[in-house]
Image 1: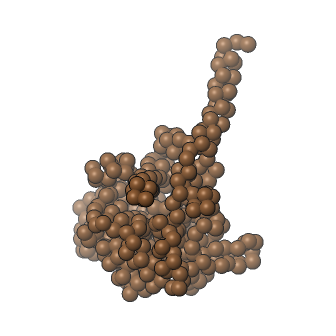
Image 2: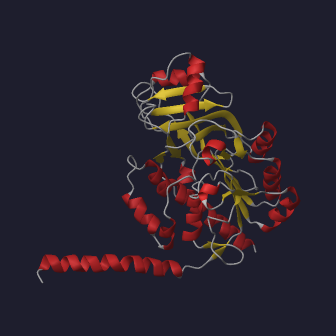
Length: 386
C-alpha cells in the first residue's frame, strides 16, 4: 500500500471514529432537570420551526423534564398542534387555562414564549396564496398567557419573551399589560431584510406589504435590489433599498461589552429575519440592532420617526429575571439528530459562512450561545438556591 492511500485510510478511520466518540461523550454528560413551559402558537407545519431550535439546545445540553425524560419538540409545548395525516387538516390547541394559571406557575421553573403570531387560513389550508393575509384560526397573546407570566414574575422565576408576542393579532389591552410586565414599549414598527425586493424574483415577498405600499404612496412597487422593509401597526410601509438608501443591506446586531462577557456573544452578527423596534424602558440592553443607512436612508427613517439603532436583547435590571428578544430569533433551520453529538456547536461555529447562510450563522454564533448561557446560569442559580 503506497503512502497516499495509507494516509487516506488513516484519515477515513479517524473521521469514522469521531462521531462515535462525540456521541459517547454526550451520553455520559450529566442530566440537568429544569421544568420549562414553551409556548408556540405559530405551528402551521409539522416542522415546528419556531421552537425546535430551542429544543435542540435543551437536548444538546441534557436539560430534562421532572420525570428525567428529554424534551420532545413535537409534544412538549403549549400552542397549536397539527395532527396527522396532514391532508386531514385536523389540529388541537393546548392552552394556558385560567383555572390552571397558579398551578402552572408553581410547577414550572421558567417559561419561554417563542411565538404567538398564530396560524391563519392561508397557512393551514394548502392551495391558497400564503403571502397574503387571511383569517386567523388561532393566535395572539391573551389574558391567560399574561396572567401566567405575571405569576411567574411574582415567584421570581425566569420568563423569556420573543418577537411578535406584542404585535398583531394581540389585542391592545393584553399588549399593554405584557409590555408593563417586561418594562418595555413596542413602537408599533416591525421590520425585515429581504435579499431581493423584486416581486418576480422573490416569491416569499409578502403581497400584502406591496398592496399597502401602492395604496399609501399611489405608485407601483418597482424595487429590484435587496433591502429592509418596515411595517407599522397602522398599516404604513417604509422601504430602504440597497445601493440607494443603505450602506449595508442587512441589519446587524451589535453586542455590548457586558453582553460579550456574560453570554459569550460576538461583537456583531448579521440578522436576516423579522425584528421589531422597541423602547428598552429600564432594562439592560445586552445587544442592539443597527440599520446602516446613508444620508438618503437616514432622512427616510427620521421622517417616519424610526431610529436606526434600537434594542435586540433586553435583560431585566431588577430582581425579577426576564429577557426579551426583539427579533424572530428561535426560527432557525436545524437538524435535531445533531444534538446528540457533544461539541457539535463548536464545529458549526468554525465552518459558518456569514454571508451565504445568514440564518445558520446567526443561530450558531448568537442564538445558541445566548440561550445556552441563559439556561446554564439560571440552572446554576436555582440549583444553588435549593
